[in-house]
Length: 304
Image (cartoon, rainbow, N blue to C red; front, side, top):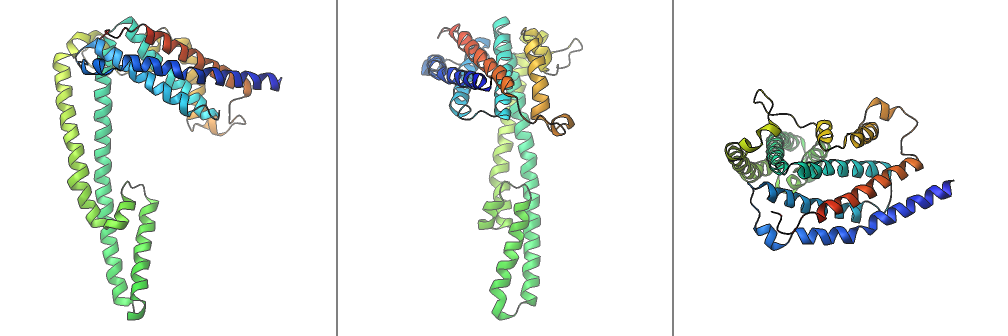
């Protein structure tokens, strides 16, 4: 029995990896220079074909990188990603205006990323300033206490102590600060990184305002509730709209159990997928990959 399952797993992995050439061919067909140059961010068709092309690239990378060794977390994560990807693509099939919904979601996601990143950069500056102050105080204390013969060793010891403390915290710039100094690194973050992120946020807010004024009115029924407030994106609801609810129920049950540190995933004897469960998930990945190819082939090059 175990031999049969092993044979099945090997056959499925081979079938999945064999789709790479077809995926790459379709990606090239839908991502020509002509198509990319013709892209119009206010066109729902442009977004649908652009997302399809980007999806093919993403899945091609999965096929290249995720099937040399089969393990639980990677298999479930790829399955869930393919499911959520297929929700978008099936929504495009049902109503092309979901391409503009995608555009709005993209703006929101980018804005949240840069907002969170900006907050992290300000935390970084505060932490770097604190380490700089602590290092200066420790250096002065060491200078007062050190004898001339061991002065160099004491200074190196103080620097090493501060560096180790910084390394234990979550810092994007701790390694650079070892070379540049904590105070100087803080100034660099303020003048360069923070300025760049603030400029990106300003541009995104302007683009979002333009979207709300010129794009949103055409998709109000898809993204706004009756009271005019923006609907929260819910994967279960979107799966239902895309006629993929059974897939949602199956995948999210496993994903919640295996991908999140819940009591049910920690206190259990089953830490990994069983061989037969691997077969089920790999079959799902194979089917969704074939489905992606089929959906891609429905897009002519002049679809946008």
